[in-house]
Image (cartoon, rainbow, N blue to C red; front, top):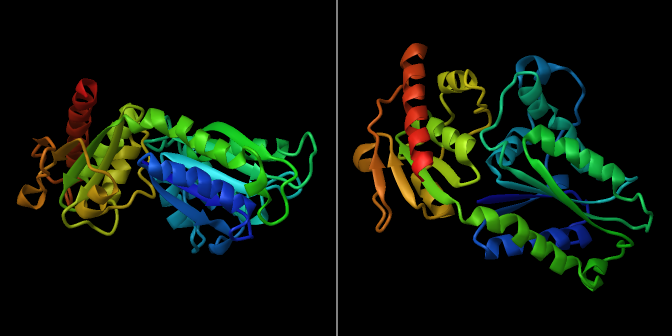
Length: 321
């Protein structure tokens, strides 16, 4: 399970950072893989409303957002952490949120759904200097539509008033404990999922499709991943096209090595799509051989047949899992 923290405060090691660190530390203790992404330190250009994402499905800017899109798409849980600036998130966090228009466009204009959209969870941690009753209302609305754009349910907002000076969050009677308890509440139902790792050579065609179908069909019960013995640089564009015909969005998915995938979490089941001796056998881990023909460099009609074959095999697998 991957938990992505978005730390939006310009102050490093401040109150917001401490609150998020408490949540992520508990997530790590429970067995999750986490990343604390320091948003102000990333190169994120502001949206200029050029309309490219609505027309083409992608943002034309060359900055850090493509990498961040990939992390958002990989995450099971996204935690936004920010201080309140004029009843909303910081400018740095707002730039990231605004650039999520590309994800909104893919979902609502291009009718594509990320495989984890039905199961991903979003959560907000916030601190504010004042004690106003409506302090978190603006952030609450912004978060609601941000998480909807990236394909996540908005679980809750945990906000603390009158927190401003250095280290004040550490003196709050419950804040850090609350963050840890919330991590337990969100993560524990997902920790019991069966981990299935789909394997092929380049992790650009067969295993990517299998993993996407498994996430889409049963992401609440199965933690699916994919990897390759010799990973390519990107997912095969024809695979992206035929999966889009099924309404499944493969944008921002990236091939990875088998070692990288196994290093994240030990699987409960290995499914080899036909990578021969290059696919590992792990002691005590069951393995299935599907022996599906590699569709790379094949015509699109052939890739469609392979897609449909994989979809049917995955449906049977998740039904019996």
